[in-house]
Length: 84
Image 1 (cartoon, helix red, strand yellow):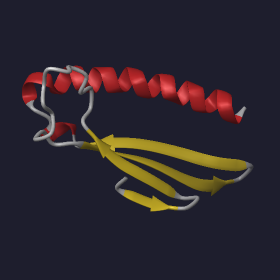
Image 2 (cartoon, one colour; image 1 turned 30 degrees about the vertical axis):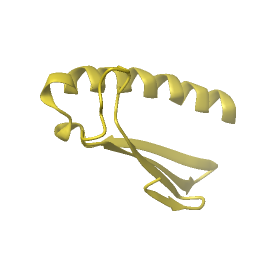
Image 3 (cartoon, one colour; image 1 turned 180 degrees about the vertical axis):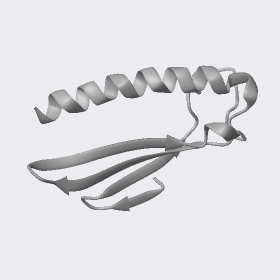
């Protein structure tokens, strides 16, 4: 975990799309994911950001970004279902 501020912020780092069991990703830069919550009229606003793709090795950057984008879209649907 990178940072935690109860009820407002949760952030962590990870190796995006690091799924090949034959590759050691430990020396590769990580991206930072932030979940920010803020009160808005009638509810709570959730903003999710992921940054740091510019530091991911060029040979896997586009695929990691594409797969993360698909994954976050699915997770946002899961969050929406959970809070509905």
